[in-house]
Length: 420
Image (tube, rainbow, N blue to C red; front, side, top):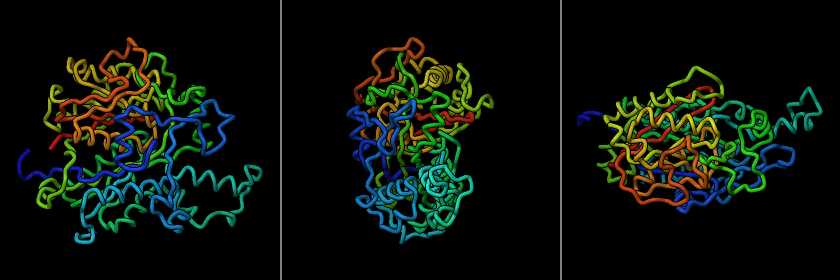
């Protein structure tokens, strides 16, 4: 890159995730190879096929939210506001000393305020007994639950951001795509700083019923800790999760001038659609491979430059085959040499939020030069024959890492982070 190009970097990370609230607890869980999957406690799952999930032990009062904020905000909004505050504090950036019109927000979410909407429907319909509902029984902020952009607005309000504010909803790649959009705002000089990330709190009966219907989630209810098994020969579906991660993005030279700690540079993003099937994937992984190739080209890197891959690794039969094929197609021989892992084995699949959590993990991996493992990978699958780092974190020298996502609707996204 030339010196005149604006280069986005990560200077702050905030996390709300299963297994612990905050960036440090998140990284400790991942590097220890611990799983946060368990029987669902947020509602009674007895009548569902899959009764396991990765829940965040989140107390909004302990997290610093006021009674008014708790009343106004859905759980997903609470997550992202708390993650934003941690990212800002971690960055050391003084928003009050900057131009609010140069502060942007880019938040992703697949299912918006699902929990608030379902809870209110249950009240308004008298648990489904009334076809015609009485709106006077609803909370005052019900309209906000119905509009996904509310999530980005809550972040903007909390950070006093008056620049570009966007909600990205591209299914399970929302978290990756939102950070990609935020990085582009820096590159094109539309913002000096951007709070970019994603949030989802989908652990509700309606979400469980939807995934039960298509048999996408694991029915391994007798052993919740080992239910999420990406790339394992006995994998039987993904495990739902919840959470949020927000990254503080700044222009590289400005961050260096103010003495900021830089986790990583956001080198490139690329996305493709398979235009094939709402939930199905082709076995050859062509569309994901194309996204990877384009991202590497944008970052001006060769496959040999990639030192770690954070896989989508959902734990479904078709995804893990598709992804393995995509790595081989795009990276060639390098696919057999580079370590690959899926953190969904430990924190589940939080739908739109997971891409931002995975990018947070990538930035921390670069900082600490440690590859998080794939938990529960006990039996090798001949169709998934790459180095998926089973069980134990691995010290590993890294300069550039790749993170990929695959979402219902055919979305395929690849992102490259580089060490600074």
